Image (cartoon, rainbow, N blue to C red; front, side):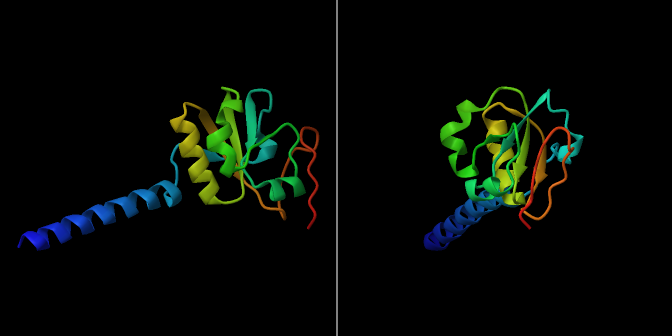
Length: 132
């Protein structure tokens, strides 16, 4: 009987750990909206590009701070304490980035999911060229 309780407790613990990991990575973050880059007021908001260097190099965003998600934990102190807008390439990057930055006290007000085939921007504020 004691062995069965231990096995059930271990399964419960393992299930809880897996659920937490899945929640942090895949469950949507509430209160942060997808905003088109052309609708941003650039003077008030700092743009943080969390895409991989290979991807952000293909479609650079002038004025954005390039900091791939893999380097975020090491270099988050370089990010100014202003309202932030994240540029990401996937919902996974968005969820991880927003949760991490909020945990560190940053105010993330929006995000844009960008791939190298599409990027809508205001022509007079950001110059972006696509290679597709």
